[in-house]
Image 1 (cartoon, rainbow, N blue to C red):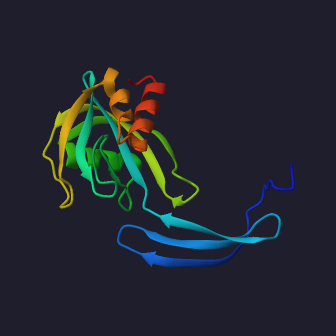
Image 2: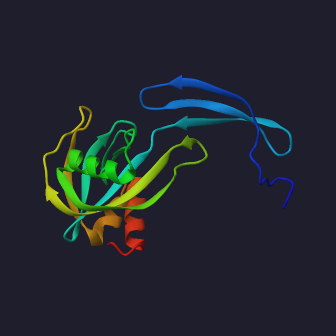
Length: 181
C-alpha cells in the first residue's frame, strides 16, 4: 500500500451545515487526510430515492416531464423519494401508482447503492415491477407528467438520448443484466 492510500476512516475535525431546505441539507466536513493535511469536503444530503423499472407486456413504463433543474424535458423511468418507514419496494409500489396509474402484482429490489459519492450522501434503490394493473393516479402538486410506454428493445437507446438520465440508464441495465428484460 502506498503512502497516499488509506484503509482507515479519516478523522473529521469540523462539520458544518451551511444550508437546509425541505429537500436536502448541504455543508462540509473538514477532514484530516492520511498525510496529516486537512481539507474541506462539501456534501449534499438527500433522502433515499427509488427508481422503478415497470414492465407491461413487451414495454417499459416511462414518464415524460420537465426538469426545471436542468431546464429540459425528460423521458425517464418513474422515480421518487422513499418516505419514512418505507422500504424501497413499498416506495416503488406507491410511486408507480401515484405517477403512472399502474399497480404492480410483484416488485423486487434489484440493487441499492450510494450515488455520486464524491458529493452526495444519497442512496438509491432500483426496483423491478411487473403484473401491472390500471389504478388511479395521484400526482403530487409539483408533478406535471405524462405516461408513455417504450418497447423493451428500444428502452436503452431511448434512455441514452439527451438529456440522458443516470437512474433510467442504471435501472434498464440492471434489469437487463438480471435477465428481466
